[in-house]
Image: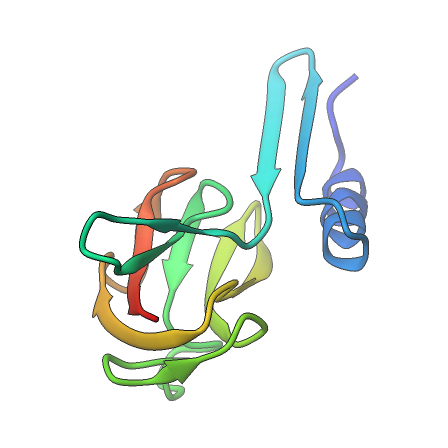
Length: 123
């Protein structure tokens, strides 16, 4: 039995509202793997905010709105840095790290894969 939109909404609500850091759901013909927060370290000490899911990357909450962050913006772990759209659902992505945005990797409205670099942050 495939997941409905309501099923996906409930899964994302659980991820948002609980201390779970990772969730994997598999059914016939459908697989969902979501990882919350957590930036990856690099050799130069710059942290990477990675895509927690596959979807369309948006820098602002709506067309024409001010982007959540720019290069030079200071972020904290709970700062919303972008939105990723999955199945017509908008999912806010928190930074998960503290520091200054030094690079925005994807273009606005670009499809991103799970684990793709979204932002580089100098702690």
